[in-house]
Image 1 (cartoon, helix red, strand yellow):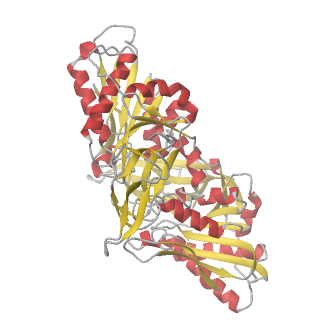
Image 2 (cartoon, chains in turn orange, yellow; image 1 turned 180 degrees about the horizontal axis):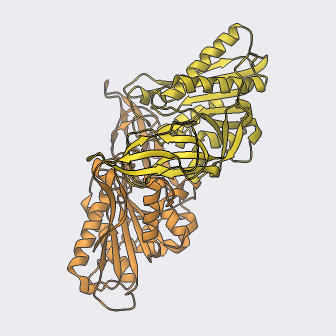
Length: 314
Length: 308
């Protein structure tokens, strides 16, 4: 059932509406009262979650007899951004994932954020799907703040992702949807995968399979599931960042999610006018490349890759 | 005056971005003023430019106190300003969300790092700041409460109002917050414009900074007398939201003294022209902020009133 869970009037003849598709199964069982939320579209240029939502909704709707409990799908927390290919909230130039938990007494954006939190709160699990930006391609991964790691990693492992990155706590991240929900007791997992403004269908199907595996583990799904992959958990392994040291176009010579040894060639930064190589980019450590630059133009400092290091056998 | 490049970064397709500082006097690093960090902060750049102009004149007249240095950086992100973009040209990130910066990090982290290294060690710091909310403000000075800066220093600007704000999580990566953490007593100064310049409030801002310099013994000059600053906890500002969307026809201006029950604005149906809402002040006070765009959304903050 489609419900508007938050809305506000726009200036001329229109309202912004944040919608939730509630799918409640007809199967009876212990998990009848359980609820899982799938949210995406916080950033208007991140589209991978659209296909995950669509696939999840399609499969559930065709198999209500195999679903016990409720799955809430929120395909666009930032519908105006989605509609205009704008990462933030149009007109405010504001990153929606920096205004949570919001407040009913605040601006339109803050009031919408507060309504979103209110609607999701109390769910058994929330999956918050992001897809990098147009510059970087990410392997399907779950990102977990170290303060929630113990509680969330077991659930993250069910989601059929390749990698779980437990990152250090940063004050600035306290304004995110995931942080706001986790600190108030709603377990929320952040998925990052693919690249902005695109749908990588194999990643979407991979995560969708993981969502059904999670539902099965929660006792909410009796239908078929695929065997899920065992993710690498960052744990004590360091993440190394590879930033461009020169300007130009980056041409990679490695594939995404491959093992690489320290000193091996990742790609070149080339001056487009002369064809000369401005930088020979190498791996600072041995490990696995889980982030790789997608957008070719680079400044000094542009992120080229992230490597999960600490694997001398790679 | 000494003109120096504080930090420079190469671009693939443009001449290098050179963040330029203008130094006056020599000796202890006394005051640094930073202007536009975003491409739309024209007023912030203009205030700094006027400040450079006044300080050049004062320097010629020998009015810069010995043993002190003042540095003004009018524009950090002129790359974005020159192409009409608010945030960083390439990746749309906000330099004022990257402090203290990181020299091996992403481009705007490197810019923040380079700038921050160049402006550390000053006793006082002033950032010409802007709001994301569209509207007119009364010029004021704001202090992010970190425990490192005296509230009373704000009164030396001689502006009518000064605000103390508790930092929120996203404030911890701003220049103001980090300046204070690294030992500079930092203030944010707001005028009532951003994308365009407003001569009157720019002059008020320039006078306020020069007044601060006089009070701290950095310059000698005669200025118009300032106000006795009232330091206000931000919680004391009453926010007036719109109850519906439409065209906003305001009946008051910033600085107006209003009584409880006074009409603040009318909201007009944008297609049929009817008045669909009238908004009245719930308190006696001074209009501190007024939303200044014709079209407004439901729940827009239309006014902020200092309750008296």
